[in-house]
Length: 462
Image 1: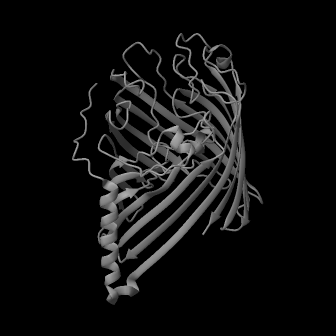
Image 2 (image 1 turned 135 degrees about the vertical axis):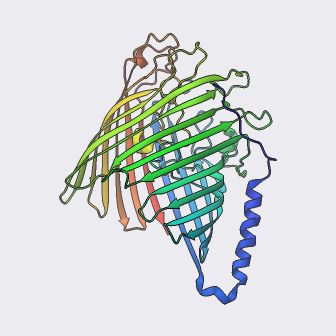
Image 3 (image 1 turned 120 degrees about the vertical axis):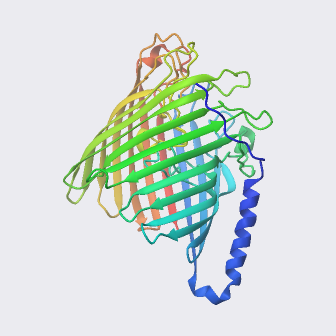
């Protein structure tokens, strides 16, 4: 199956254009003194300090334990004049106490980066709702965020440069269309990351992400219905980066009955993925393999009222794997730019179970007082969907397929408490993975034993 690549315009420095455009627009607005009463300005900030520890490294080729202190700061400003807004956000993410044997990537460190710099214009529609369009670099949360979303737990965030439009009808229907160039976080080498070196992130037309999304609360009474399609197109650039040359189309649907006290709720989402990609991003890998993959998320829960509101839910996750590495196909589902924390456990140093090659039933209990604290306890079992593909982010694989598909069980918890309401919040949590039969016989297991992950955060909101 061949999907034609996208058109490649001249690769300009998009970040430079956006900066100049923003400065020109801001200067124009500031010069219009006669309308200062309609000029609004908002600024906010967030600082997060986290210390995390991973005992019993699970990744093939690594061993021992890992520890990391991360400092994340975000400063966001918005200038609004009538129906036009200019938004800028600067983040600074740094990591300390890692070493040469650490699993440290650009997911942890991104020093002094303007992750958002865009202009947005809203157009009220006399007949039906509102339309807006934004241009620049921005973050996105699309639907459930399982395939495209802004990271909340991970130290760094996904950002995109391009154009996005939204239409919202008077009855609440939403339609979103976007065409973007995903941000490439820089630097990417271990030595630079250990030193928290500074380098502006970049984006170019060698990687393009587009999407169409529709949401309705009217189509089925009492339910939220969503439909979407995302396209990812990338190609190698030997002077900059090697990729898996993904040419993927991912359509999907979601049906949701939101949780309410004293009622059952449910959610089901599924998608298929087709196109071509390579099995690895190695420079020597030049085989474009056909892809036909898919994923399903399903859950149902009940919320009990009282002083401590409690929701108990059953969950199920499926994401396809590649059954036969020699058949000319590559059927591991690709989670695109979706955060996994909400469903599959902590990320950062942990990030053990991504949305690929997975069959996983689970149980979750969430407690919420509605005031100062909330907590969550979750359990899930994990099986390989395809016995000849690696499990999760471990890199552990049995190409013969003779090892058990039972990978193990994960137990996690999280608790959050407002030390100062809406200003200072403390969060702590842990995840434990009890390895199953797969780790007893797979040939490249590092033998470190059951992984255990702990973290504590302090969040400051300004």
